[in-house]
Length: 416
Image 1 (cartoon, rainbow, N blue to C red):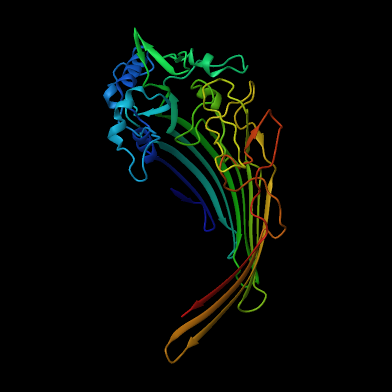
Image 2 (cartoon, rainbow, N blue to C red):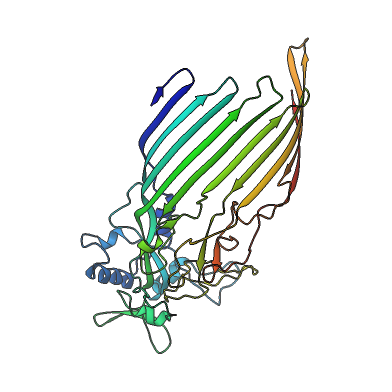
């Protein structure tokens, strides 16, 4: 909706409910990482009896054949046994983690979006606007461990064996250190230590105040656009594979999101010194993204924390790192990031009157990050190399990567 105050001022606002699709990975992972062995179905039945699975659930709706790894030592080149040959081992194959379908189905994520803004045309070349945005998102995907060990309330290092005994379906080890579970008097081998399921229960809140001031070139030799945004992002899930650090306790996961940037300044300045020439200057200044302080050890013994080895080809990913007792998720901040770019452009156009056709040559030189600033925040990377994941207590910091250094880019374009 728009409300015209006068010839130069307008107030605008909007509200809506927007639904999103369910990520394909939710169904794909539930199929690929699933299992339908007899022992595993018995394990799910025990979880249902203990209330970890809804009483109305049909176990058959949760399982699928899935992909299990098998190995043989006597196969000739290109003559490995078929997959069917190994099917008899399915009922005795123990898994660290198995993914199942949610028997209650999946709800579509949705967002309530609200905005209100004010815009004023100061004169023919100057425009000012101020906007307030508020979004609340629900039914966001995250993982729940149906066989999670009890919470580690002491914060002391707990062994995996001790943690396994606190699971709804306890995991034991025999004399040969082979894991198993019990169902009455039956020994179950083809089971899983962790049984994860996607639940659409995540929540996020985003609020922002955006200030914009723009000057068109008009009769002058310059123009610019200035933007400042003050924002906040809070959530209890980051992506469909996000899981709580300890015992499905998502209350402890409510924190600023990894992509939260409280302050963001952007300036784009154009200068036209002479005909066919344009000089540009851009600045991007933003406050640092959050730091999640994690432990190098599997404190709660759930088996999902792995110490990364980023200097080896077979480096281990941080699957679900624990945090030290009293340390909240994303409780730190990286330093501010500063990026300044310069550009120069020559644009020559020629009009062929005989053919009534226009030709053109465009040459452009850009120097990105002209000050060669070593920024630690504000660029895409993975969890192994991200400065947002730091091992240790609050305040510990070891740089892992930097934003791109100074780059020079030359562009040539011929139009005909």
